[in-house]
Length: 327
Image 1: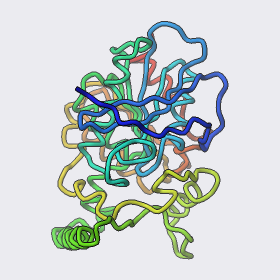
Image 2: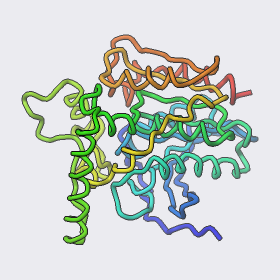
Image 3: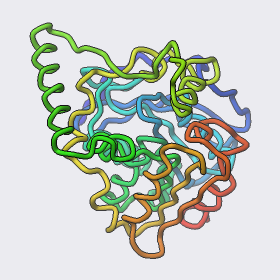
Image 4: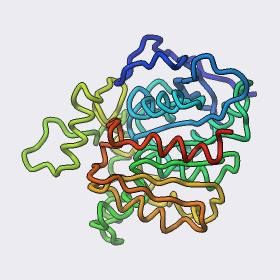
């Protein structure tokens, strides 16, 4: 018997974006097949009746539903979709211990569990469900689409392939057995130290204060996560980061290996000037057939696709999901 954990959910509007009165909002929860209870914000077009098309949104990696994913979900609800933005396992208001860890398997399952939930709602057509993954959850979304045929359309926005960057570093800078062995030894030593101490060491998150020599993409992250623009107290990227061993499993578990067998539509959107653009281009090459589309936004950076309404192609997203979901 599935048993939901009782979560302490904030009922006040604590998002990094303004509320849209054209949309009804409520907090909901659902349970993954690992028994972890996830928290979500549900956005529904005001006055909508009957069975609706629906989407589940998650990301960026380390962020919470009060940030970019909630903005996307609310906006798509203004365009006729029932949408949920959820906190992944071990993050934000969702359950799971320890906190601030990630897993290619568990976080892929988070998307599939969201589809479980949506499929069983009386106001959702279970044959018209899609997903949106932002940043690191773009890779998880593609992996979920390769696993779960209930997902009828997938959009990956400014995606990171977390397996690839963990295994190879940025732009292949640590793509050697020697470099990976060094990382494995560091993780192994950290595991021993954490177990001896009885607690997990935190690391990562967006650097603050910003070093003078920080590259532009780090400056862009800082401008989002460390300022009122996108700061949120439950976001690991905004506050004190991840567990130092939190992403170990991405080293040996490639996310996109089965992307070539996705039959449903996949839309990849990336900024022209994003440091991470090559992840979407690599994912596009892995996909097969005429079900894939890559859109490059002129002049846009990685973080522009988090919250810049002048940059995020919401009309394109509406048209994309309209082909498969809205009828």
